[in-house]
Amino acid sequence: MNSLLPAALVLLAASATGLQGAQPPPVRGEVVFTDGFEAAGSLQDWPGGALDAGFQSKQSLRVERATAGSAMARRSLPVERLRGCVIRVAGVVRAEGVSDRPQPWNGVKLMLPITSPGGTLYPQAKIGTGTFDWKPVSFIIRIPSDAATAILHLGLEEVTGKVWFDDIRVTVVRPPAPPAPRNVPAKPFRGHSLPRLRGAMVSPGIDAEGIRTFGKEWNANVIRWQLIRSNSQAATQTTYDEWLEGALAGLDAALPQCRKNGLLVVVDLHSPPGGAASPGGYAAADADLFSDKRRQDQFVAVWERIARRYKGVAGIWGFDLANEPIEETLAEGVDDWHDLAERAGKAVRAVDPSRTLIVECAAGGNPGGFDGMEPLDLPNVVYSVHMYLPHAFTHQGVYGASPEIRYPGKVDGVMWDKAQMATALRPVVEFQRKYGVHIYAGEFSAIRWAPDDSAFRYLRDLTDLFEAYGWDWTYHAFREWDGWSVEHGADRKDNTSAKTPTSRQTLLRSWYAKNKKPGP
Image (cartoon, rainbow, N blue to C red; front, side, top):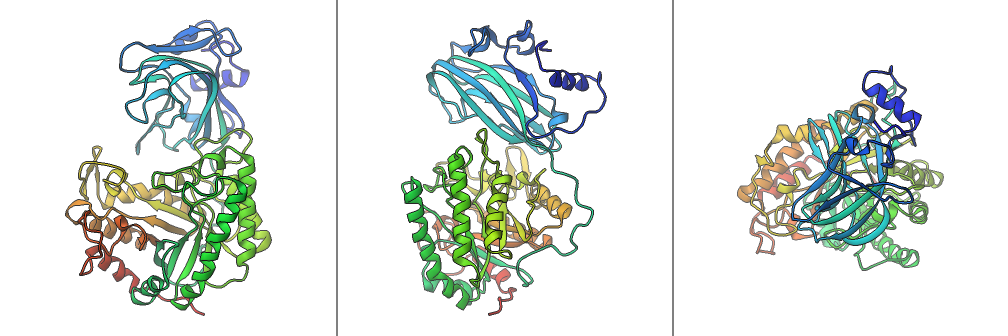
């Protein structure tokens, strides 16, 4: 063990080896591991590396590879103490002559593979290739509550060159969620009095006839309205505010049509300030939002502005604070998603004390992000999950050529069927029961060209589960991109609506037929 570790870390190491009694739970800001590679015997702790001149110090860890392949130094972290925590893994890195990576996930690695019964996670810092001087890198990750191992990897994967690491530090960003409250509400807050909300996400470009068709003919009772911008728009605060004004004007025009056709509206800030480019060409909820305090202040101000604009306006079910937030690059001194969402929610509450808030987890809305998540300290909150698991099935062919995958069927050795989807959704169900909250499935889908009508079977099983759990839901999407459209058939080359209703359309409309409509 590194003889120069701080006393708190020596205690941690002693506990892990049975030499120390039980410790108090980890606290925010606690450093649970650090290594500057200065101690004698450092290489014993990091097999696979070598010592070299460090960053503002005598020593660092060097890993090099002369031929194509991988070279890695590894060290286990005390996973028992980290379970349920959100942690930041940080360090400084420099590189020399690192070759181009064959796949986006290859290259220089500051990575923490985490194993659990649900599979293996591979969180890692985003680090470039080529030659560069010392620079800070980091990422954050929530450790699953049932994690079995967490092993730091420093090195090179499928590339050649040299890389140096120094000042590795693992810090608790957020400790495990507190125990469930003693008095869990028997009836969770839902923000509406209808038996169930069932609808779909829509494009902000939808016309009045589309709204009428969805509300009157299909009998949907809710839409999720995207405030979404392209990557080329709104790069500065001023241009963002100009874009947002135009987007809200479009919502203003649609609200009377939605009320007329019995559709409640979820206002979805799909593109918050500081959002990064997403594969679909739109700005998503990450990047600068979690690295720039000014962007976070703007985010709070945006929601205060929206709250003032729609205070007392009928027909809005709730405000979805950010679409699929991903805080994996959280910088020092800025809020994580929980604290930022709570701050924005309080700004809304100061203007409108009763408006429903809708909050997604910080793992891009994925079900696993609910494992260990803590509710906001605010009233009138609904929590939202997005379900596209397994992505290899639901998104096959979306971002390029991929093998045909059927449902039910095996993906990466796992049999995906209704039981497996229930397993994937279990963290959400447990969160729902633990805290007595309402769940809204804000997005779910499967690409229409999945073979052998697989998309229908996937959607059938998923909506069955949502109904069994008592969740409101909105399909992704109605009259947006034809790849997700239930009005289009399975032939990818045919971009026209099917002449007869598809099995997917029939399925959704059978659920919509059960809907009750909101009152005036």
